[in-house]
Length: 519
Image 1 (spheres, rainbow, N blue to C red):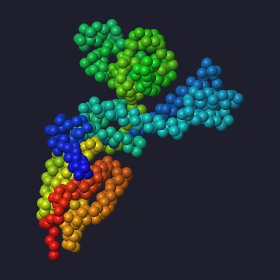
Image 2 (image 1 turned 90 degrees about the vertical axis):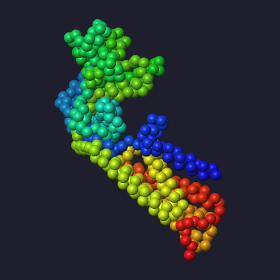
Image 3 (image 1 turned 30 degrees about the vertical axis):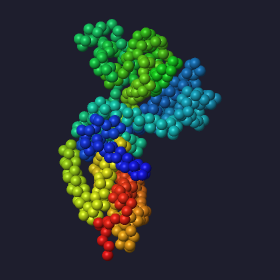
Image 4 (image 1 turned 135 degrees about the vertical axis):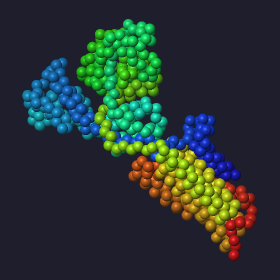
C-alpha cells in the first residue's frame, strides 16, 4: 500500500510542476522554483549572435605590457641597473641582450622574481627571452572569455530582455540568444562598445540646490549612481586615473572581517593613484563606468604601490559584484560578429498555434485508439499518457529547460514511446489469458514479463539521447534533454502508475478483461 501511495504522490507532484506552464495565470501563486517553461528563440522570436573573441589581440597587448615590465625590472635603481640593449617584442614574448655576460644569471633571477611564475626566462649566451608559460596563456584566454561574457551579460541585461542565453562555445566563441529582441543591429552596437572606466575627484563644494537644478558649473559633471539613478554625484571632469591602468580587483575581507574590494594598478596607474591618494586624503573620489558612478569612497590614507582597498559597508555579494564590475569594465579582447540570425515573433506564434492543433489532434486520436483497442485498460493508459505528458513538462520546468521546437519533437516522440510501453504489457496479458492463465495472474505476468522488453527499448533511447547531448549542440541538445526526461517519466508512469490503476480495477480478483477474446 505504501508503494502505491508513493507512486501516486510522485505523479501528483510531477503534474503540479506543470500547472504554471499549462495555466500561466496560476504562476503567481506558485513558489519561485515552480515557474512556467520559458519559450526558446524559435518559438518566441528574437535574435541570435555568435561572437568570436579575438584573443590574439589580447595576447599581443599582454606582450606589450610584458615589454614594459621587463624594462622596469632591468633598470630598477633600488636593486641596481643591469645594462642591456636591443629590447624588443617577439611573436611569443620579449627578447633583449645583456651587455655584460657576467650579469646574465643575475638578470634571469631578477626577471623571474619580478615577473613571477607565469613567465619563462631562457638564455642563449647574452641573449635573454622572456615569454608567458603555456599555463599562463591558457589562464589569460580563459579569463578573457569569462570577462567578455560578463561584460556582454551586463550590457544585454540593461536592455531589459528576459532570459537571455549567453554561453561560451569551444573556448573562443560566445553564443547569445535573446528571445523577444528583433533589432540585432542595436545589440551589436551595444556589445561592441568598449566600456570606459575612469577615476575622478568628487566636487564637495557643490550644493544640493545646484544638483537639483541640473546645471553643473564648468569643470564639473553630475553623474548618477549605477544602483540609484536618481541620486547624482558631482565629480570633476578631469580624469585623475584611467581604468585602463587597472590590472585586477577582487573581493576580500579587511582586518575587521568586513567585505571590501581590493584593486591593483599597473606601474603607470600605480604612480598616478599614489599621487592622487597622497594629495587628497579625507576627500572622496568616484569610480565611473559608462558614465555612471559605481562607488564614491573616501580616501583614508595614501595608497602607494598600486594596491588599494575600497570599503563602504558592502555585503559579501556586493563586494563580489563591484570587483567584477571593476575587472570587467573594458572588453579584454575585441568581439567580432561571425553569425547573425533573426527570428520573427510572428513565426514563433504561428508555430505555437499549429503545434497546439497538431498535438491536440494527435493526442486525441491516440486516446480514442487506446480505448477502442483495450477498453477500460486503454482508458487507464490514456490517463497515464496525460500524466506522463504533464510530468515531462513539469520536470523540464523544474530543471530550468527552455521549450524549443526540437524539445516539442522530443515530447511527441516520447508520447509515441509511452503508448508502445503500455501496449506491450496489455498484449502480453492477452497472450497469457488465451493460454489459459487466470486473469489476475495474467495481469501480473503481463507486466513482469514485458518489463525487460520495455526497459530494453527505453534504455536504448536513453543511450541515443545521451550521445546526442554529449556530441550535439544547441537544438540537438534540447531534443536530447527532453527525450531523456521522457524516458524517465515513461518508465515510471507506464511500468508503475499503470499497474496501480490495473490493480485497483482487478481488486485482487480474477475478473473478465474486455479486450481479451478467448478462442
